[in-house]
Length: 483
Ligand SMILES: *Cc1c(COP(=O)(O)O)cnc(C)c1O
Image 1: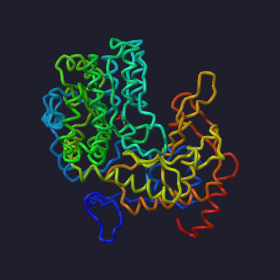
Image 2: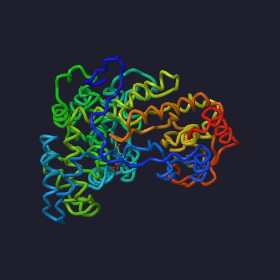
Image 3: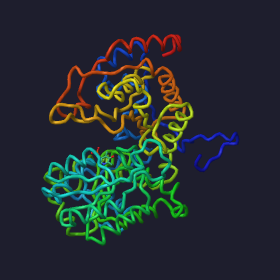
Image 4: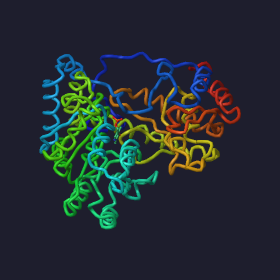
């Protein structure tokens, strides 16, 4: 894979870094894992990190820092105003996004969304986008606006070899603009590396087409660049017209199409924070007033100056193909190995993690017994691996109390950037395969404590029947005294 070939012909992703700080991991025995999963209400959000062997819950704020990032943190300039740290960070943003002279710092991605929505969205407005992200949608609807998702139909098909499943459906975008009228569209939003459809990319060509339509109708174009680094890697790999371009050139080309670029530095930049890059002075003035109100002074926006220094170096590293290829290559390896073993996964693999298709893995578990949630609990019991339910459990009930069934029941196994080695990924593959072979043993879940809002974060569930005891017994039968 990538630029290094193995003499053996094996296709393996190769770590282009070495590990110099480590954190010890623990793997409790399977009986203990079953007990801990139940103490945590069969909700992986409620597990304690000390009890987890591989934490594949999210890629947010858990990426490994480099030596250069750690070194940069020591020279943080901790002043309330006029900080050199801010000057360095904003200069780096201007460098990678040419043509964006203005930069506003925010404490994380959703804070940028709050500010954009507060500044531009009015009641009755419509914001077209390839796909929503949870926090984006919440901020737009909070201001009385509504979101229209215009992803191509391939984007929602679990297995489809379309290389750019995150693309906009251009004819639908134009039809929508004509239908609602440009005056009711405060901005069009492109989400790079579309999060909720599995980290799927858009092509540069598609972004150009969106930009051309926006220019034609006088619309503002906003890029959510939180998952840009994965999208850059896929453009470089899959878009023939971009083969000879460097990552920096592709980034500059994308930037040239946009009016505003915002990002979560919990993902882009390998640290924790965020920011908004702006092309026009008038737009900067319009958004600026919200920063001291919600975030902090204009030179830190709620971030620690140490994190800002780490982001500055992390943004530079996001322009390095060796560095940004690591995540997508590991994810592709995991998805393809599972596919070879017959486990239903989302293909082609995207940038965020490997997604298991719980509907197909557990066809005997009905929607209302949360198959993706049950699979998450079962995988923790099977291997101490923590994933995140992305299915009906993550939805909110309808007004009348009935369940709103998700289109896809997925278990997301996120791949924190630069964190896990290939043998750890092999271990996760092995335990998923074992679980798949024993899928008939896995049953459903029911709520014992169901909060009205954000039930997937805090809700507690219990297994229906004694399937977890049976799963533990089968594990002992197959693995003997192994952990
Ligand atoms: C994570 C994410 C956000 C929100 O960022 P936070 O830093 O978690 O607030 C917004 N957009 C996308 C595409 C994301 O992946």
